[in-house]
Image (tube, rainbow, N blue to C red):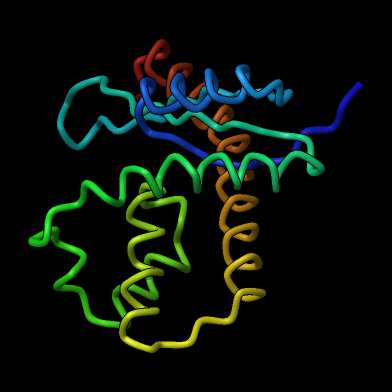
Length: 161
């Protein structure tokens, strides 16, 4: 059985579906975990947030990276001049690079491009390390999230929550 590692997370089902279709088209094997987490009690409603975690075999990471970059680079040409990232400070742009799972691929690439234009040097090895660390932490939280969801449901059925 193939061993999969966390590669990318999505908060929108349509984004995850588009990415999965791209992986299928390019014959990249994947696994996906769908995690629902409770967002409720403060608001008195039972609302759930959903995260989609795509996992790949480690040897496919570079191929998938190249696909994402190619897709995002096409979209970069369509970014308007008044796009909000152009007003970000260097520190704010670096924050995007250190938290790639919280930003779109386009925002990530644009932040990198803007920093390059401003002659801010970014260590490529550090970028790879930041990205993989964040994804591993996200995957760990996703697996822990299952237990939390079941605990909340159990409490609701018992009338405790």
